[in-house]
Length: 307
Image (cartoon, rainbow, N blue to C red; front, side):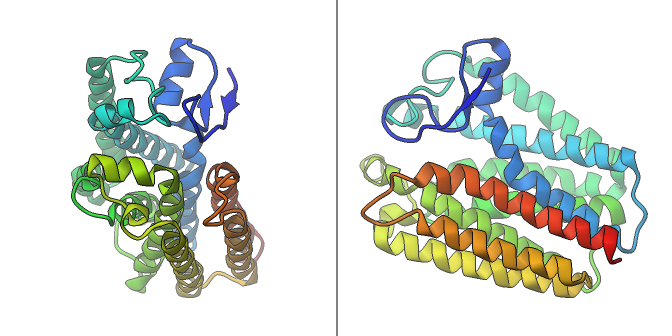
């Protein structure tokens, strides 16, 4: 079972698994490799909280379970509600539901199980996480419908992914951050980071989205302007991550992490041009996983060596 990465035409979609075994089908269904995008930011939230609060291995385990379950719900609901559009789009026609590899009923069963696991994991952490768990689930499910009525669905997705670091922080503390804008800053950073790369990801689907009445920033403004918007969002990302480091009191290694994110984002954008989208796979799949893991590595190093 090996991951493949193609993005154009009617072949297998990027970051899915070769083979038709049950495990390969379900892991491709929820794009398991995409976990590396946001899970590191959940761990950043945990790490920042650990500056003032004690953490345990059990706590980390519940955070990972909660994140994984919520992500499964988000991806599965997206695949279910978009199945008719996916069937018509050559790029997505080979997804598991359109080609009959996974039945809609079975997909819904996994959504219910994953949602229950998420609420259970939240309950093991603290009352605040439990109370907020339905809100988090509602938001990550809401994203799948937004492309039907707003071009800003990318930012809705971004805010859904930004739940990860906030949830990681709240899992440890059970209370909002001090200063209050620390969690606002990291939310803005992750929202614009993921929203920006989702704008890039939507570039190949402009004509299809327009033909189906679906909304996206690229479909609304075209490729050149969409790339500029993605770049602006990623400038905000770097500034917001800098504000996060400042508010948390982390040291120079965390600041080096912010610089590394800026360099990696600049490289990512050097791969994408309005007249050449051939390197979009490298920009979207590879670099964004590297960015989140790199930032976590610097924050962890700062916490372990300088705190």
